[in-house]
Image (cartoon, rainbow, N blue to C red; front, side, top):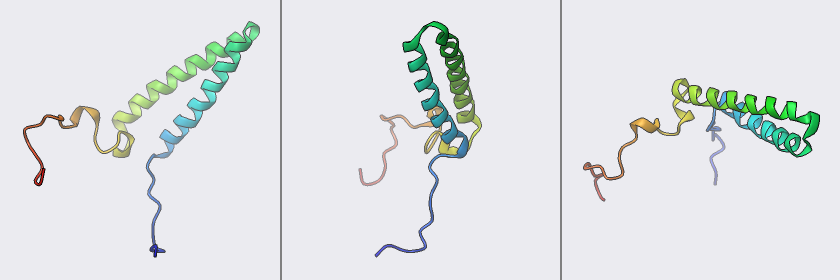
Length: 90
């Protein structure tokens, strides 16, 4: 039987969640304004610049945010697959 005192574990912090949902909205806006063309291209370009800004924010937040942002460790500190150190039992 499941323990009733289970706590929720957040995998992503609030800025990362907002980034993901804002990116979904902006990509949708970019797609439809690109298909519409004409006067809508102004909004298409603005959403493209907003997407670029979001990506730059996400990279910066990955460097300074909480450890969960990149997963268990930052990419530049991950051990090599062919490391000479082997775990016991393997």
